[in-house]
Amino acid sequence: MTSETVIVAKCSKHFAGKGYAVTAEVPIGRKVADLYCVHRQSGECVAVEAKLRDWPAAVTQALVYQLGADRVFIAMPADVVGRVRLEELATHGIGLLSVSEKKVRLVLDAEQSAVRRPMFVQRAVSVLGAKASVASLWA
Image (cartoon, rainbow, N blue to C red; front, top):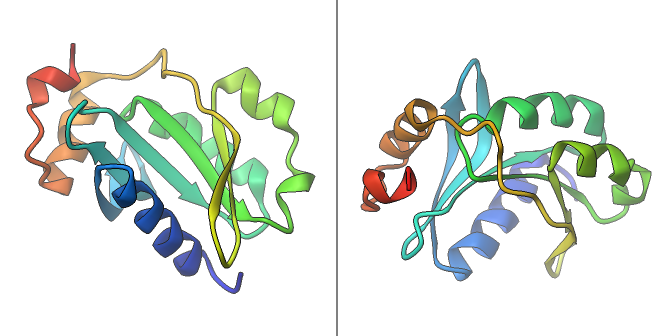
């Protein structure tokens, strides 16, 4: 894996294949999520932060993204995910995706955000331009 751009592209394809509308570079709070996805049927919102190595920085960003997403993942190259302290991610409800040349694999599932705020979700969805009903996102 040579760049975060490649990780984002692979994750974009992964989530699109699961029925999500996806877009890159969506502001949430004072941070910018590398990828933001809204499921076309359920309205579930997912934010993804891609990192090549610095998973502690990704955790800091992911904590902010929880304000504007139902679930948040960190995506990293498959050869470095073993360095991530899964217990720290689990403590915060942050998921982990392993990205290789061939696939995106779930290492740790993200929990439903306990701090999600409708105002942040609405702003992110408006950037995405998703056709999902904002009212259903707040349910």
